[in-house]
Length: 408
Image (cartoon, rainbow, N blue to C red; front, top):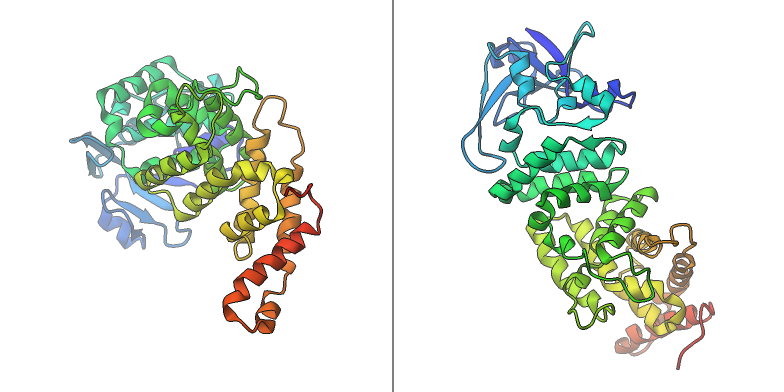
């Protein structure tokens, strides 16, 4: 039995990057031998085991054969006679098909080190086309490794996968998993550019594809359409170090503009309501987690009002705070402000501009929270009037801040 470190750990170590997780492949062993050594099985589709001490994953060397469309359409064969080279041959990219023996020797049958030096993302073999998830993985790697390019033959193969309809069989959970990872990379826009180049964006996220070519408002730079604007927004969200829910909200805040009638452009009156209508089925389709979905809905609905805080009356501000449940969920409201800041600054010439609106809303929330709702309730004889009196007290507290000229 021989054990090799494989995949991302070897790649990142060669690139001089911090290695977070290590994966291992075991050659020449059976499941019974792994169990006898104290390893705990976790894999259902193929034998994967957890080390008894480190809990790191050890997988038996295996080959795979395509039997049906989609991510699950594979038959795996794991046996002691499967070689390391056969196991590496089923991997996606050459830079991920390098193994390291226990003595430090590198096994690189597909010239992954040469592609690392050339900063190239290249598929290992034509078998790449059998797993459509690899389109998403390449797109995600493009967002992580900013000085890498995708080999032209790999781009062509990705386009062929989409054209064949294989990408239509992607499982929602895997699509979301890869998109979420890509959104958390250094430059998420590169992931979406890659998906768009191979045609996968229109299949997986047609709501985002529809934003390209749609003008922004007339007072924005005319050369920046809504699709480009959204890409600038998610990159700024990454630069700000925002968490995943805020980055997803940044991605989906303008969906309604993609279906704005041509005769209305470049105005986008009422697109927030349309954005919400598009966001709901998108989240259902991809099974987006509730924290990402809920924040995205708030940002899509209220980002324009957040930007225009100086024009809002105190009563309007209080209603917005109430509808956002900002009293009970201040951390979510703060994430909402961060996503709105990314939207505001994600335009030509705006990247370095301050966003005082966020501080104004935080002051308003502090005033909102300063109201003694329990005290008002105790002093009110008519229980039916309690909500109205608390609301009025909050409006008065926000009004005292003098954040804006009060409109009649």
